Each structure stands twice: as C-alpha cells, then as structure tokens.
Length: 393
Image (cartoon, rainbow, N blue to C red):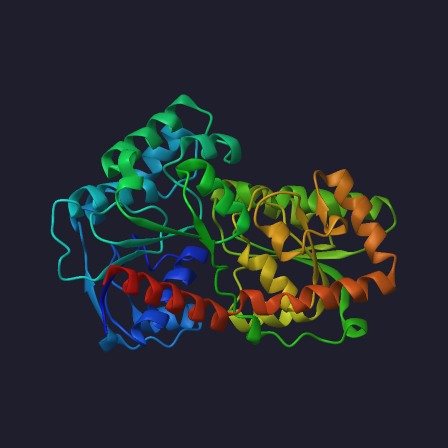
C-alpha cells in the first residue's frame, strides 16, 4: 500500500473534472492510502450521490493547502471575469498559487502525487490528468473565444510563472489526457508522451427504449452558458422546422450564466417545440434521454464531452460540432459532425430520413460505450498508478 496525495482545487464543484476526481479517489482507496488536497473539504456522501461512486469517509484524509484562498479567491471571480471578459472560475490561478506554496514543502511522506485537475508542478513523482493544457497560452488562443485578448494572455502568463511551469518537463511528470484530441494538444505544448484515459461515464445507468418506441426529438445536455451554444442549438431546430421537420428539443442543464440563461429562456418561451428543462435529477435526465432518438451538442472543441457519451449510452444519435474530443465519441462519423447550423440541418435530415442508417449508427455507437465506462476508467487508473509506483521503486 502506497501513500498517495491527490490534488483537485475545487472537488465539490459540478463538472466532468470533479467526476474524474471522485472516480480516481474510489479507484485508489481500494489499494492505497490517500490524502486529498483541495480548497473544498470533500463531502463524501454528496460526492457518492453526484458521481455514483462508493467512497468511504474513513478511507481518505483531507488537507487544505492554502486556506486563505477560500477567503480571497472566490470573491474575486466576478471582478476578474469582468476585467478579462471571460467566464473563468480562476482554477488556473488557484492551482498556480497552491503549487507555488506546496513547492516549498517536502512531500517525502508521499510515494506519488496525482493531479486530477490538469498540470501540477512538484518535485515529487506526479501523474497529471489533463482536461486541457491550462498553462499553454498557445492552445488557449486557438480554442477558447476569449483567449486572444492581451488581458487573458497576461493572466495565463502570470499563472504559468507562479506555478513554476516554465521548467515543467524537468519535474519527472507523467501526462494523461481525457481524449486523443487533448493528448495531441499536450504533446504540442510540452513535447512529451501522453496516455489517453477517457473520463468515467456512468453508462450502466442507461437502459434505452427500443428505437421504434423512442420519441422523434432532440436532447441537449449542458449548463446554460455561451460556451455550450444553446442559442445555436435552438437556431438549428428553427431551421429544421422551416424545412418541414417538426422535431422538438429538450434543453437540460443548470444555469452557468444568468444573462445568457435569460436570453435562452426568452427564445424557448416563444417556441412550443423548445422545452427548457433546467437542472434535472440523475434519474429524470436518464429517463428523458432513454425516451428520445437524437442528441444535439453545441460547444465547439469540447475537450471530451461526458454529456455526449451519456446520449450515446441512452441510445441517442448525437450530432456534434466537428472538433474536439467529442468526435471520438461518435466514431468520427462524418454524418454526425457539423461545422455550422446550415450543415447541421442537412446532416440531420440525411440521417433522420434513413431508418436503416439510423439503426446501423445507433448499434455502432452503443458498441463504443464500454470505452467510457466507470469500470474501465477505474482499471486504467489502477494500472497506471501501479506502473508509476513500480518505476519509482
């Protein structure tokens, strides 16, 4: 049994990164002693409910590496976002400050450090699970809409310098990515080998209805936020209706931006075929997905796309932007990938008008589900850690 330190700055937040953290904790506590470093104290009962894990409180220790951040960073988020014109949670800054502090202490009591929240610079052996290379200003400029601004580049430069990421490759790091797309970005950024471990998706929760019993409608899952492009998704439905295809749409997800949610709500209220469901309990979301034939995703360059994988697990055929890790979930099938709303409409009409093609696509996509299962993730993480520990001895 090894002593392992796991780092995740905001483990009680809602998101795919936190699901990775929770399932990593579950995987590691089966075999090792684990200490969680986070600004949030883990509420194990809530983590288990939210992510479907089976973590026992007595199996983990907790340390807040920088308590002052709780009092100073959270109130600063709104101010900084107004300055940058972005929607950040300041994870990169929080991570950088914590790394700067921890770099001055000894981690001799730990055999391994595991970051489930992107790059982490430390003098001890470390596995870094990368959702997106946060210290690479080059990649942010390519794939984030606010990144090209001088203010944002300055913010990222400060984070990188504070964390000590300038000499990251001298720290003996092992890089893991959430998709082949992300892995390529990490290779470009740090000139290093990268292993791909897809995030854990609770595929076993789904038992989809027979295809002919499903409703001719679309599900879009994601927090209501400009990056998720719900307004674009509604535009696609509008265009379908103008072409005589009377599909309906359910928008599922909590509010990520109050102002954007108000705009989406106004659009939904004026369209009888658009249903703004908001946040749904897990059981409600699963049932809704199982009952529908199609999915729509709007975010370009999604790093992976757990919600897209859930649509597939629920027996839906999802249509996604042509970019990011989400194309791997749909098997890079050109019929399911679009570059703009006009192209989305043409591809949707082509697929939905061919029953034989639909059944073939659904069967093929369902076959991919095992690649994203929680069991597969757990085994991959355990194998990765065992291999790393063997190399450290």
